[in-house]
Length: 225
Length: 300
Image (cartoon, rainbow over all chains, first blue to last red):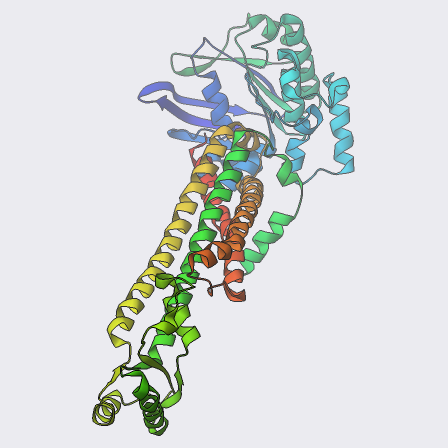
């Protein structure tokens, strides 16, 4: 599903990874941890095709991102749900329209899909704010909105970059619960976080692997995580 | 052709394209105002260029086929000499018509210098015969020789001395007008490109979000092109309309000046002016496409 093979990446000569490899199986749950600036966001961006590795290959759904055209990258992103720490929305659209945006751009904005949007809004607890604009939401609500938008196309993999970075513990738990529910539906979850208590909490509910980026390498974290 | 047809179909297709680009912000006014101002200048420039081209043709045509005979003689001989001159012209090959310029016509000719109430009849004036050629043309050398033999007081003027410089000046003005219009189209392209780039810089987040949710580049390009082209079209229509009003008011000025009073834009010219908004639509499509594609290339 997601194959990372001997990938190296650097910014202006400063290496972030060196020959990192990973194979992600369908339905698995991963946490990616590491200190600030260790390359967690870069890793997520590489998996999402927003960055192309300098050395090595990243293969998503059997196709190498390096060889994908812009059209193919867009097709791939429709099968990925991406949630960023500083999530961005179209501020002139309502919450409902923002959640439906992936459907709109894919030309799937029909009645049946609209029903799914309403269901998702209930699921993330934003059903009472369907006509509100994103800038009127709190940090936690924005993260839930980003999650709802990420899963509307029923993606096979969800890549979340520090989704709980800007929210309190209660909201973090709520977001984690949603992620666990998605994983139980068979979705592959990949979350980068530096919140170790969140990882511990997740492991009490679901089988999750924790990876750590340090010293340019990706390694399995200790059993205490 | 089919590409343009498909493009217009996609422009007019789903309203979803419109909703992803915001309707607000300073860039809306920037784009519309730029298109309006450039259209106004383009219409005025094009109109003057067309007027100059028409003047150039008219002057050239009228002078090319016209000449005159001036008869300077005492008043008692003038009528007889005029009759002889008209008889000679009647026998000359290539003369379409010959007409004695009357007192009223002379007054009108001299009105800019002498005023409309000058008593021209009180002074001794030479007789003036206006000649219109046929397509065959007049043998001026032969006519000049005959006149010098039979009417030594007659002076033949085929206007060649001042026809050529007038034609050259008129042609130059017309060419300069066309050059100005070409420059205007190019500068409009640059201005619309800059306005589109400014609008895209203000909407870079929209591009990022659309890419994130899996929008194809063609969708993003079409969304922005539709929005900007509509703004440019509205601005251009307003600019053209304002320029049209100015042009409608122009004859009043020119009548007072005593020049250009017979020069008007004909239907073909007006159709040309009406194409300005369409030209701006085409400019907008290409400029916006280029700007969006460049922005998408830069986007990580």
